[in-house]
Image (cartoon, rainbow, N blue to C red; front, side, top):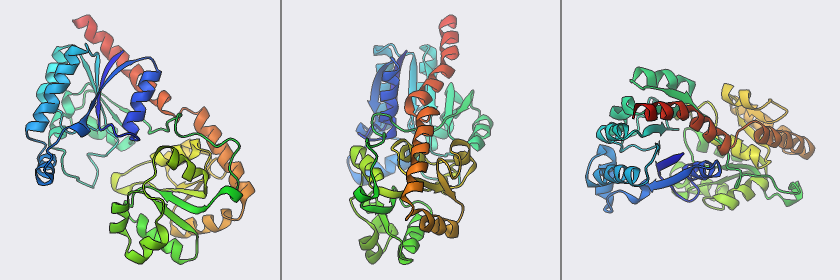
Length: 349
């Protein structure tokens, strides 16, 4: 299948991992990196993002159509693309191209982030929408979507894999570890755990954490900066306990990070949810918490018990690698869903 893949394609972004998975599946993938579009002047760039309008928006849409023709694309896969115009989607349909919007963020959720103006209008004009939430299936249909399917965020098998042989506590210099962004109340929770004497370590984008923590707390909790690729994997290996939180402001059912931690053979302590419980056996393949008191109690219980952590981490890793929580399996599901649409489009042509 010939696919034109449009997304922010930063080196360690999950969208780039999906491109790699599609190529491993044998598809011809041409990419459009949306990071290369946008005003250089910061104020103009901010205004352009909020309004979803301007010369760079026009340039992106023109390039999508040009490359779709040039590469004879069968599918245009828009991964969190907010600047797709209705006219572009209509022209792609006339060309016989099937269009899919892969959107992990929650347009219908309570956060109401800016920049969604064009996306909201374009919803009825995509052939398929992919979302990771049950509640969004009906949201998209109510907004006029032609078709919608639920997908699962996944780990990347070339990046997220276990250490051989597995690390022991003698090699671990991170006690209770969180690697990520301080959404919701995470910063306050982690600071509270630290104040109660638990060995917390936080890594991620320093700009975000510097806003979320005061100077003393940042000094105590934060280290190693923003971790990607092999550094991220190694930090999971070096952590006795790896925390994973749901993003409540995005109404998430499970955390992308949970699958990555499990695939790396890390001990996973994640927020309890139906999404997590459906994917890992509690107490056997992962450990869960529902509130602060349970979180602190689980940390105190498992931190000194290396044998239990090793057993659960190994079972969690085997579950992730055997149950299709990888990118290859997940993109294959989407492609299989697209095949009948593509066949119908070809027959009509």
